Length: 221
Image (cartoon, rainbow, N blue to C red):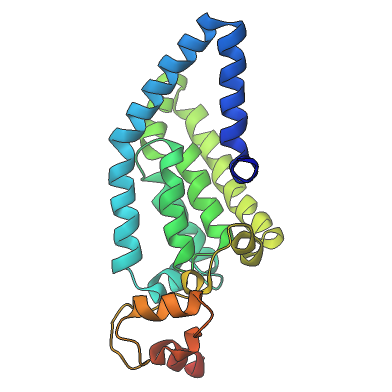
């Protein structure tokens, strides 16, 4: 039980908070339950589509494409593509995180992940239209002209201070998730499938260098 609370601190704090509110203010507790129900219903409507898109990114989009357009060496072009993806996204901000995680696992840089999430939160195109209607075009355009450079700068700053190693260690991400296998199941590594090789890597019985395709890429670099 203690280990559970250590690993799930946010859930534990939330549970205790709900329990205290139930004891001392039942009216607030009931209102919180209703709000939670509405929030969960919204997630049920949105998250399946987001998870499917994230899975398709993981399976269909080659790591080379992600690294080229969103990786550490993508430069300013990567920031612009990240802004484009974030600004044309749909759904609430929490829907950005599964997709961001999929891109991260395929080789996207920390800086570009920050840009995508930030763009998703504050410069979506539908938001621009609504903002223009209620607050006027000068206000909306001025805010966008200031916000876009600020997001890019924020991405660069966080990318300098937060390294992949820190994220991977914090989440205990295994090597096969960081260096993606090609999923071709060619058998040249002596394992029948890439999944079998990944399992061996996780168990410490193999390395990603046993993948002939990955090894050839490293040698070319």
